[in-house]
Image (cartoon, rainbow, N blue to C red; front, top):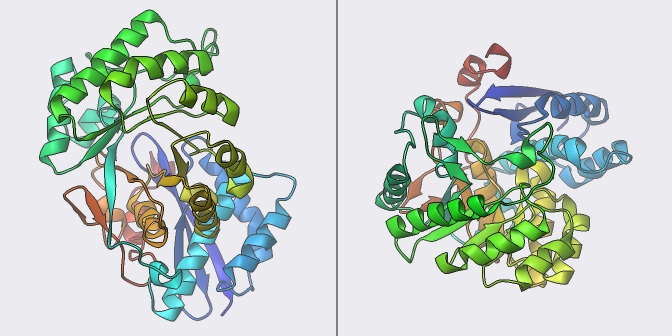
Length: 391
């Protein structure tokens, strides 16, 4: 079997793009992968184009060799866009290998360790704050609307949610300084007013969902260590499932973790085992995230196995399409150390149409894919209707 062509699709996902990879072979087996980057989709696609000459004509089933071929091609550009491009290709190659053998990726990697994986409703309130009309849901104008959203999460069978810092209003808004620009956006300081707002927002959610539903707050890159220390103390009263913090200094994460009873999660922006190791050696966080569309499936499996050695649970970072959800659920199905999996419930109306088999979610658990490959394919006719360039 040989690779005959590699194609990419940047798809409109409302307030961000999704990026897919399609690999065709001379035996008629087609593989799909995802490597969505909301900030630089054309950079990822351009890197895939640069990698094509090294891959066309090679055997897609030897996905480990193909990974190292691509690593050597991008040796001087480690991580980032290059890693994401490699990840999308890696996922498509593994899809081909499993389909060629007539098995699911879960079976290919020795699973399953579980038949379903617990999922949490991610960006709960975040997506509605900016895009409620597109999603077709009520706006968030008051804290009572936040409470109603929390009750909706429970009514729909979910046992955990994750939110960001949301300001209800008309319109609602988000605290997003870590991704902002311009003067005054680099200090990353939590004011007393902001601390009180965080306390009010999380208290509203906790009262609505009760004591037994997992509650997570994602701080992203919005704050430096000093502010994270204060936030972690403020939210101790809510017994969070975790406080999620993005930082590239594992010792700073450890400082926060050791200062509080609040559990800490990090890792979604890390690439490969090399970047995972310092966090694991320090036991810097209670839960480590792995982003499969940014690392590829073969390397994510290794990162998950490494975390098991250090007695650390992982949680896939997954705020993408249904294809990515199947890919991430497949990872959960072959690892013994999974805390929970992220998934976006509030999303664009055409999300289900983009794949042949949308995920099955029952009582807050996603069924592990069992069909060959990822258990779903792209519906290319629908993909063509929603290309990012057509916005």
